[in-house]
Length: 370
Image (cartoon, rainbow, N blue to C red; front, side, top):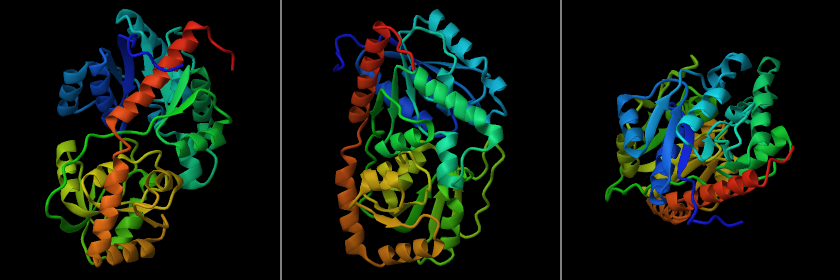
């Protein structure tokens, strides 16, 4: 059933974290929901936000932080047992109409009858399959169980790409009620003059981002490779960069300014359910060098150079070839810019509202037994 804009949920509880891309997703979405008269209660878990992040969230909604972990930072399922009840209490006190949970595990064991939308931005099980090429370890099997229970408990499941939805089905079995809502971002204004640099941005401590391969390649590139983002994670994982220029963590405004200036933007990720940096780079007029993975093929086919993800020599060669060919860079940048026009906050919001409608319809009709 199409979403009826005349009857949006008045109050949405949306979980988020301050560590990765979910924060930017939540802020962009809350801005769009406000235009439809929907207010957002942000409920944070995991490491606390910075002062700047807190101020941003409080401009767009109300922010409550729970001293409870994210599933991928938890040691076992017991550490997550309090989350469903905490969310239910907040929903009751704030008169919430719909739950928007940005980790499937947060819906596992949820007793609330409120419509519930679950978003899988990534998951440990599909991460292991893509990054380690193994099943999740036995001592992390509880992650599989909680994610599967949460996905089946949801009234609607949102995924940021068809490829990620297929990865989830491969891990957990067929999932009904799944809607693809590509992520969107406000356009980055391109600089009139581009710098002869290769920019990459990610949480480099995460092996999925494959920063080590790009760092090895940087020893053989004609242009400097700039790698923005944290190299040490909250889980203790770390990456030492030897050849690329480490820029560290940057504010969103500073990163967008660099994206506007860079002639080439690279993303070597071996696991990427969407890849927001590639979108922002395309908006900013950069030529894209992307790992040859299903998600990037789905989103950026015919608009980017695709490189075997784990082949450092191939990355160096692709960088040098593109650095030496200005007309090709410009042509690729133009194609990527046109493709980026498909991935807007408005298009993302439409997909989310479709999921809200499905969840509200299903909740009103009674829960189905999985």
